[in-house]
Every structure is written in C-alpha cells, then in structure tokens.
Length: 404
Image: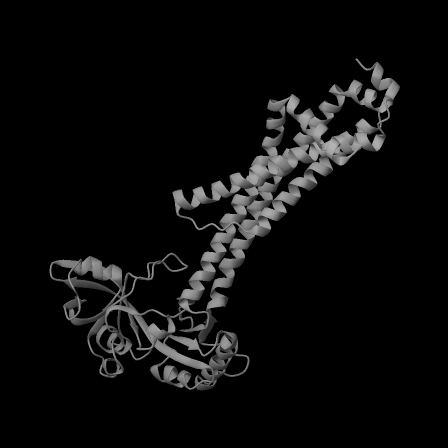
C-alpha cells in the first residue's frame, strides 16, 4: 500500500468524527500556541534589553563611587566620596578611553513662570551626548567654558520642556532650580524609557561643577561615564580604569575597591539571564499542554482502534500487512498533531501580536521556536500514536472479524 493511499485513508477516517477530531487537536493547538506566545514574550523582552543597551552605547563603562558605610549601615553604590574630578581627568588618559563625563546628581524643583516641575538634576560634562549618542533637538549642549566656570546653564529633557513651557520655545529662557536662576541652552531629543523603566526624558542636565559648587557644596563626584574607543575593547578598558583608580587611591593588594566599574553588558546580563529563566519556565509550563494534548491523542486513537476492530480484521484478511495497519494509525496520529500544531502556530502568532497591541509588551516570534514547536508536535503524534498503532497491527484477523 502506497503512503499516499495510507494518508488518504487516515484523513477520511478522521473526517468521520469531525467534532471528536477537533477536540482531540485542541490540546495540541493550545500547547503549541502557548509555547509560541511565551517564547515570543521572552524573546521580545530580551531584544528590547539589547536594543536599550545599543541605544545607550555597547562600549559604555560606568565608574561609580563605592559603598559608604556609617555605623555598620551600608548606604549603597555612589554614596562614598572616593571619586574626585582629578580621577575623571586621569581616566581620560587611559588607553582605550574615547570620551568621559564626570557626574553628580541631585533632585530639584524647577520653576518657569507659573509652572513648576520636580525632577532629577544631572550634573555632567560636555561629552555626555557623544557617549550616549543623544543629540539636542533644540539649541545646544553646554560648553567646556560653562563647565570650567560652573555656569548656571541647563539643558532640558523633552518631558521637562513640555511640563514647563509647552509649545513655547524655551531656548534662552530663565528657569529656577531650587531657587537658583539657570538659562536654558538646549533641549535633548526624546529618548524614552530606560531599561529600568525610568523616563530618560524627565531630566535636566547642568555642568557637574555647578552641582558640586553651587547646589550641593561638595568636592567629590559620584560617577564617571566612559565611552571606550571600540566595543570589543570595552572590558579591557574597564580593567585598565580599575587598575588606574586602585593606584590613585593607594589601595593595597587584597583590599576591596572603594569604587565600582561596570560595563553595560555586565549591568544588563542579570536582567537577560532573568528573562531567559522566566522564558524557559513559561515555555516548560506551556509544554505541559503539549503533553496533555499527546495523551489525548493516544486516548482517542485507542478508542478508534476499538471501534474499527472489524475494519482492521477485514483489511488484514484481504492482504493488508501488519506494518500497513501500523503505519495507517501512526499517520492518523501524526496528521492530528501536525494539523493541531499548524493551527497552534497561527494562533501563537496572533496571540503574540495581540499582547503587543493590547498591553504594549514587546514580542518577537523566533523562527527557531516555530520549528521546535512544529517538530515537537510531530514527535508527540509519533510517540503517543505508536502504542495504539502497534495494538491495531497486533490484532489477529480472525478475532478481529468476530469482534462485536
């Protein structure tokens, strides 16, 4: 008997009980759709993280002051006074460093006319737009002279601009930050949320020297943002910076650092690993649906063998071989699985797109996930269809013809 003939017989047999066939495929449909959707969510989240790293600069290195401990209480990263402006100047001379920007942050209440807005005030240097690939939309960033003289100039994020000025051009306008007058020199282009969910546009940039001398009254900085000359040299550059700072801070071998050096990949790796773990967990849970669907297929095929015992006996009596019967029932099980898998894949695509449209969550359907889900559906049909098919092939023709 040809394979085409066996396939036609299998499809005809499945068409006899359309409702039962549809319900049998339902488990496979749900399982495959769930796997596709869960993997799409995980892949989308990972792609989003990678895109955020790219937008921030894959060659970016963050140098932060170490932990500050008082009375046994550790205040956390960036609270120590161990980094100085001279450290930032020295970092500029490290091999592999292209740009650097010292930073000191604070909070401020901004006032413009009858509008006010509380936001983060980031004291930084002139190279920050180059490090983060973040140009101005209006006006210009402040200059080295502004940094050297601790000038009271400010560059607004787009959210701050909208809150304080609306449709009015803010360039040249005077705002008050914690009751100190600042002249607006520029507005940054909108950048959206960061990987941590923080709105990057809800910020105002001023020279770090201004924050140090005129807003906080300190002589140290909190961090230095560095851009390596090439992405491939980022880790080596970070190591060289760490060596330089250990030497400058006279840290003895074996003593802990009083600073922290992190690359963007290191900062994102934990989130990527967490996303991958969650994706695997959700895909595993969804895989249970495939298992349940496979058991459903086996049950229905066993029922089908019982119902068609006389038919099997008749075919074997007129010359059908055991392997023909085995192949016939196996093909039926595989057809059930593949049809269910195909519908499940289509449903998975639809659900992934639905999640993106309704919830705004990023999704990306991986071709590998589609191939794996479809292959798993086929293997499920073979695995769970083999026992009923073998049982049918093992029937004695005489006993089968007598079966009532």
